[in-house]
Length: 427
Image (tube, rainbow, N blue to C red; front, top):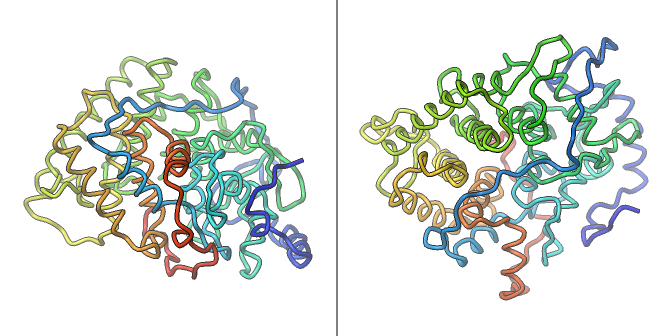
């Protein structure tokens, strides 16, 4: 029997939803995202890649620095980025971001905050998704194929925003390979089915490969090569070179996710030898270039601008950009730096300034402001937790044991919907 938690009332699917579920499964047999492949049209399924692990790897942080991030500062930031989402029309990318930092085992004292189990269920159970989106005429998030499960992604309402982001976030959250997925057609599949589909559908010439590379690295470090449905051979060398290739700024979230994924592949290579010596050195040189760019582009108050790839010119000739982009750049750079070996770290004083800026900025935001750009602020919580060598759920649960929240500090899961119909361009 599946575990019930304190959010059971929130997730109750009434009779009308069940009827809508049946209609939706007939109406939307195929989603609108760009994950199509031969498997959808009844063509060849392709090879099945043997996954040797039950749970994905986790790249552990290298530092525990209370001088950079104090317990009180971390608690204040994590309090801000608890997954307290409105019940109606929950954005999948919000849930994905919350799950990746909090994990599938996250539990909260506030019943209005979604647990890790509830976050996971929203993404993997069509009934839970439909309970939130039943008032909107949107296709299902999950798309059942002949041999697996894919995910509707793109700019449409109720979609995952980026290719393989859904799978990458579940992976970072530590989901089990055999975790069930309940499809719009009423069938039960598993995370392995979704992973196999992603491996088949992957294309090296896609615009976004950041989350595919991250996911494959955390699940398949012992797999040296595999083939897509169209017969193309994929290796981690090719994934790495695809991340490196092209202008840094063209990547998602101001190019920072490509940097993060490159760093993860480099760290995985330390133990699992997934890269050739030549490609490993190419990643190393690229990360050293990024290091210099963020040394040169940081502003005196500690933040990085949206055009950090301009290096010194970014400071000499500042550009006007929405404030949230400085949150993106600063939070994301702090995140990959927390996992980086010392040769890639920027000077400590610059790290200190960046941490101070992003802590003060996040804590000062009102709940509605955090919710409007939750995806970006979630990276702040994740980055600061890494700098304390902890997981947000472990730290926050221990903190609340010693500092139980006042009743007035709990919010409502039925807060008004935000106007963030477009996920701020990147997330």
